[in-house]
Length: 222
Image 1 (cartoon, rainbow, N blue to C red):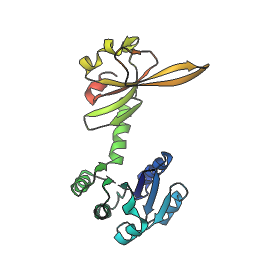
Image 2 (cartoon, rainbow, N blue to C red):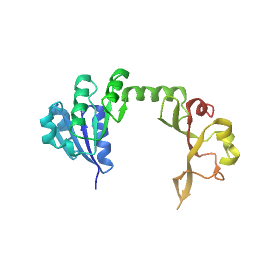
Image 3 (tube, one colour):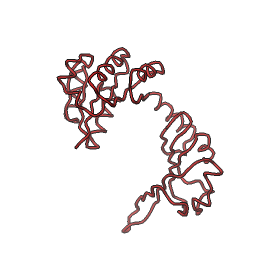
Image 4 (cartoon, rainbow, N blue to C red):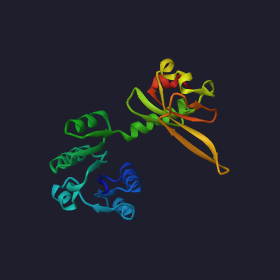
């Protein structure tokens, strides 16, 4: 059975979340009071509705209470964001994710029962800044202010060494959680992923490493 999501607020963040969920075979109910935003997603989601999400009766009639997860992406109107979350809690939705525009907004959302608060603008700004400071990092997932998962080319000092020989965990405090190899398959160059590699797996020159650790420790590998 497909997982059902309600996306409330169809700005850039909400629309992107809705379309991404549909691509992963989820059922998505998209809601906004702006007719233009709703029409833009009509053919891209399961159901797009124009309604005021601060109206509990309208939410019930839309069937929001039946979804597995609700995502509140109303960032510009903090009062509406908080009110919608409170209504969703009253409707019995167990998992609520909400966008916050600042720390105070996020604290209030957490206090009233949001399971996860996200800060899209702040997170994107951090990723852009990180890419400028460390252009060798191909991709970075921020787990917390101190820890990240980073995708990066294998440093030269690790070439032709096994993970055991690299001794990264002891010397740098980071762990390799995946290795992407370039391999020739049927005459074509292919990317082969080695998830959760063993200590005896060898790191090669053109490999891409996915490492987990403290940001300060990961930066030492650059």
